[in-house]
Length: 199
Image 1 (cartoon, rainbow, N blue to C red):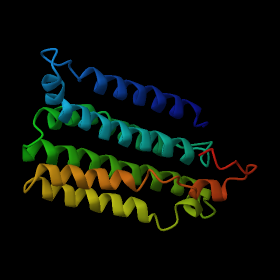
Image 2: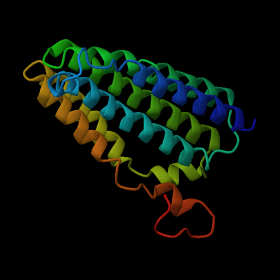
Image 3: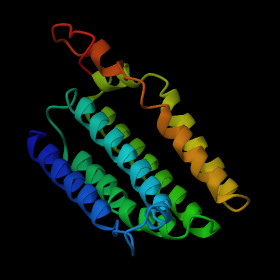
């Protein structure tokens, strides 16, 4: 079947996730700069989560350029990914309200790790459905970014019980790996070359 409905559902869920996250940000209790500063942890949590959701959406778009047709297994794997992504607003809000508490920071990391594992499951399902000549397999290669990210989440979860700030820093470090434009799909996708301003 065509992947169009899968992509449309994913776009809709991602839009809702971002909307829920921003609605969790309450205005300061008063009109002073100090009150604005008090909600800084909530804003930072929102910003980090927005980056993670944007990374998933961007890579999802690129992956499905190489998977115009999908199987039922891929559909379920995508729904599994969306389930874990839908928990990001919850863990974001909890960590933002308790920035110096270990369990909220660790729970945030567990959510990110679950999303990463769900992504790998979906990736494996797409590759399996495409067979030995899978274009996605060629694009992914050794997937060092995916492995490094998962390792970063695990380290961040452990570090959260020593220092929640250190845990959050490790999560941010994992996100930074994906801020560099990923050209793996571009290398195998048979389209005219894009100028350097496009990703």
